[in-house]
Image 1: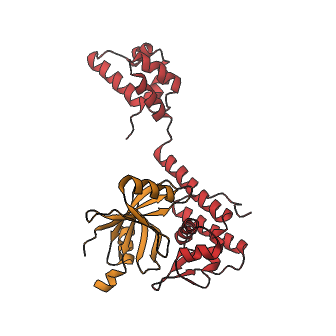
Image 2 (image 1 turned 30 degrees about the horizontal axis):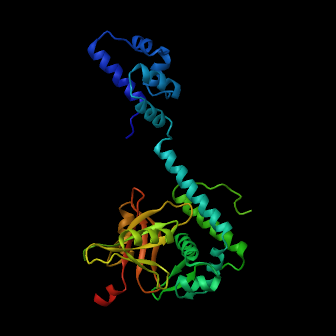
Image 3 (image 1 turned 120 degrees about the vertical axis):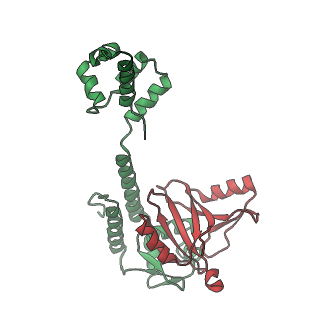
Amino acid sequence: MRARFRERLQNEFDQRRTRNAHYSLRAFAAMLGADHSSLSQILRGRRSAPAAKIRDWGKRLGLDPEETVAYIATEHMPPEEVASRDSQLRHWTAEAAAILMEPTHWELFRLCAPEWRGGSRDMAMRIGQTVDQVNVALTRLLRLGLVETDVDGAWRSVRSATTQKEFRRLALQRVRAKAAESRIQLPRGLEK
Amino acid sequence: MANPVLQFQIISKNPEQAAGFYSKLFGWKIDTDNAMGYRRIDTGSAEGIHGGIWPAPEQSPTFTQFFVAVDDVTAMVAKAVKLGARLLIPPTTLPEGDEMAILHDPQGMSFAVWRGKTSDETA
């Protein structure tokens, strides 16, 4: 769990009250040069402390400048769940973009219809791409459930798509479905 | 059957550079002479495990996975999913007969379950 500046302030206030039971929030605000009601809202978690205030109050509390910088950074980091959603959204948008912009996927999908026996080294030779390009695209097709293998090691496209446009539509449906499993909604209109 | 970690796999955005770096640093032998063009790493030691390098898509970070040997890939995937894992690549049979699946554990760390072709022969 990350330490928030609010907790540092609260801790400081509590220590002062321990030393002097009559020490008030108004006195604490005056010491910080802060508005009493703003400080109260920050301590109750109703709002976060602006960076300039953290810098100013940090000095008054005698904090190490590096500690102050860490509090500013922490205060302005998005909550973990927001960061995770952003990262998921970026991931699935990139998956969609790769499917739309890299024709290797379509070439491989076509190659595996009805089936392909052999490895990606042969696939790469057939479609004129590097083995790494083929392996990245093949992994994506497997991840999206567009290609599968059987116990004999044959690769098969799972559905038929006769044109690249049809394939892209199918692939984007899969990307959307996979993203939805992580509760990520991709923007409409990517197909166009 | 116990479930030992069989190998590590580096997922790299620049697999050629990763191969060059580790082979120069540790003297590992890297061989791509197989159907998938997979960069197999032989550390040259009977101790520890060997590994491999697989290319990563552009948006992916570079990271390392571990491969765990299992009797039955499909059954282990079902068990993992029941325990909160997310299936990334379903059970897949590779050209040389090995079977694998890739999952994310409940904290999002990627790992693979693996059944080598030789498991059939020794079973």
